[in-house]
Every structure is written in C-alpha cells, then in structure tokens.
Image (tube, rainbow over the protein chains, first blue to last red):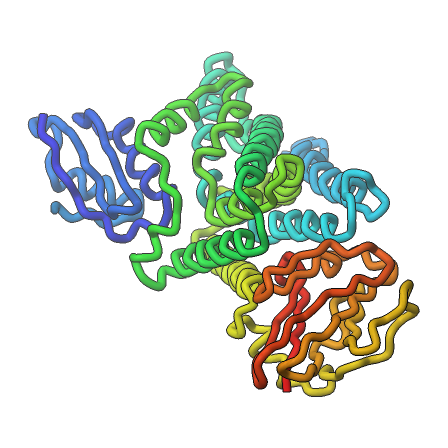
Amino acid sequence: MIKKTFKVEDMTCTNCAMKLESLEDTLEGVREINASYHKLEMVIEYDESKLSDEQIVAAVKKKGYTAVVK
Amino acid sequence: MTKNRKQSIDPVVIVTIGVVFLAIAMALIAFSSGSSIAGDASTTSQLMVAFITGLTTGGLSCLAVQGGLLASSLAHQIEQDYVGQVASGKNMKKTTVSHTSSAFPILLFLISKIVAYTLLGALLGLVGSYLTLSPMTRAMLMILIGVFMIGNALRMFNVHPIFRFFSIEPPSFIKRYIRKTAKGTDTATPVFLGALTVLIPCGVTQAMMATALGTGSAGMGAALMFAFTLGTSPVFFVIAYLTTELGSKLEKFFMRFVAVLVLILGFVTLDGGLNLIGSPLSFQNLTRNWFPSQSESNSVAVSPQQPISADGLILNVNNDGYFPTTLKAQAGKDFTLNLITNETYSCARDFVIPALDYYELLPDTGTVQVNIPAQEKGSTLFFTCSMGMYTGQIVFE
C-alpha cells in the first residue's frame, strides 16, 4: 500500500471533495481517500498492484475534475 | 395496438405543491405583525428577510452542497427498490419507482433538517448572548459577517482560489461518516442525513448561522434559522426531485444567481456594521450629501409629549428612519438633542451615537433628551439604529 497526493485545482466547494472521497467506495484497490477543498488536493492510500496513477486520474476525470500527481 | 393508461397526477407534484403552500402559509401566520411569535416589527422584518433569503437563494446553495448527498441516498434506495421489484417479477420502469419513492424520503430529510438547524440556531444565539453585545461588539460582528459573506460570494464566482478559505470544511472523518450513512435504505436514513447536514452547511447557511450568532438570543437565533431553513425547503424539494433533469449549465446559472445575492447581502451587512461604528465610509454616510433636499435642521416637531429644550435640536424618530437625516449645530457649544417618537416600533427606536458611546431604547411614543457635548467646527457626529439600517448625522458649523 502506498500513499500519494494529487493536486485537484478545479474543486469549487466542499461537495467536490466529498465527491472525490466517494471514489474509495468504487475504485478497486483504494483503502482511503482524503480530499480537501481548502488544500485543493486529495491524498489517496491504495494498492499499487491493483491501481495505477493513470487509472486514478481517469476516475477523477470521470467525476468532472482534473488530478495531477503532486 | 392501444394501451389503456390511466392518467393520474404524480403524487410528488401534489406533495411539492403542498410543501410550497404550507411553507408560505406557516411563514405568513408566524411572521404576521399581530403574532406573538413575531414580536415587534423589526423582528418580523428580520425573520421575513431570512425566509425570503432561504426561498430565493438558500435552497439553491444548499442543494449544491447537500443535494448530492440526498440524491446519492435516493439513488441507492431506488436501486434497492428496483432490484427488489425485478426480483419479485414486477415489470416497472426505474423512473416510475424513483418518482413515487423519492418524495417521502425527501420530505423526511427536510423536516429533520429544519429541526436540526432550528436547534443549532438556538445554540448559536445562546452563545452570542454570552458575548457583551454592545453596539461596538455588534458592529464588529456585523462587519465580520459581512466580510465572510462577501468572501463566500467571491468564492462562488471563482474570483481567486484564496477565497476558498471562506468556506467551512468539516474534517474528513465527518464527511466519510455522512457519505456512508447516505447508503442506508431504511426510513431513518433520510431523517439522520437531514440532521447531519448541520455539519456541511452551504455558503448561504453559514452566513445565516453567523447572523444567528449575532442575535445574542437563543429564541431569535432559533427563529432565524427556522425561517431560513423553512424557506429553503420548497426549492430544495422541487429541485431535488428534478435533479436528474437539470443540466449542468442550468445549475451553473443558478449558482451565479445565488452568488450575486450573497454578495449583495454581504455588502448590506458590512454597511450596517460600518454605520454602527459611526464610520464615514458607510454607503449612507458617504452618499447622504448627494441629496441635499434631505438636509434640514430644526425641523418641525411632531406633537412632543414633553417640553422641548429651548437651545435644542429636534430629531423625529419615525418607523422608516430619522428626519431630518442631517442636523446642523453650532460648534464649540453643548446642546440638547430631542428625540421624538410617535407610535414608533421599528429598530429606529434603538438609537445609537457611536462616537459618544450613547445607546438608548426609546419609548414608542415620547421625547428623550440627550446632552450633546461641544464638538469641533467641521466635525460630524453620526447616529444610527442598532442594526445600522437607519442613519443620520449632526454637522457642526
């Protein structure tokens, strides 16, 4: 398991952070996601053997946001 | 091949119309001038403003933050219902299931939310009552609230990322708990969710909460939040129901409309605070001299209840403010200011002269004499009501 931080600078309110955190329920290999509207970033703890950075970025894009590895 | 389909009114439409009329009726009854709940006219107007704010902007703003939570809860519930229907062999469209089964949980959600926010309003008002709410303290609070609201509006406009710090963000564990609770499908879930929304207030709600704090009264704080949350309910209900049909463009338009109204409210609140500290920079104090016809000194008194001081000035304190708004006095000499009320019930009765630290709740009918100490030539003494709404000035020549 690794922990990685992604910058998500197009969040516009607390609800955006909650939407991103809901990915921990749907994305396989994710243990925990902590997203912050104030910090404009999300910290994701995941199993790198099951999930890649590109898959995370794609999942965030599907939610309507743009994630970039910090 | 023809199908015989009964035309029936969607029960959600009936409930929606009912909620709208019930909210308006309750507001009219509770906030009518003769109601004991309403109290005096200034309380009534404050509660009406809170209700209208909720009705026009709060519902939309709340929906942006809390609507997704409710929608995901409903979607989960709809999925469970649909799976159940399919498993039992009933051939029903998913949309049919969603319309009939979403109205009741939305209603439960809203009722629970109203109760939770009313209790929160009482708590905030109680906390505020322990602060020494002198006019100066109230002014500082109003200025902070105004700045907070303006910052929130600028955040909604995406003016600059720095404004995101004007939004209250709950800790992750609370957000996670709320999200996981939203997955429940029993009747208690929407009730629980509605109560939990106090932890994720939207921008407009945060502004209203700050105002409740500023009331300094548990009762008034509760009434304010009740009025506001009740106002948000019809819009929230209708749009939550239609939420799948609202395109993202329409939602974006509504949010900009909300941001404009919050910005206006913020400037009005900030301006009130500036008036309360006697600042010459408030909108009224800056622009008063643009309308010289309102300037008049020693104007005609309106049936004073007691003798007027011979060397005094007269200020009529009416329900709609002070007349004249500008008084002219001789510099370097003490004089008496006669404050005359005649069936005056508005906040104009709460008379404040910030520079002299003078505050008095005037009788609804009568004359109160205030000794004004000598002032320098060219100086100005501002006066205002305790809400910073009605203002005026004494110019020393």
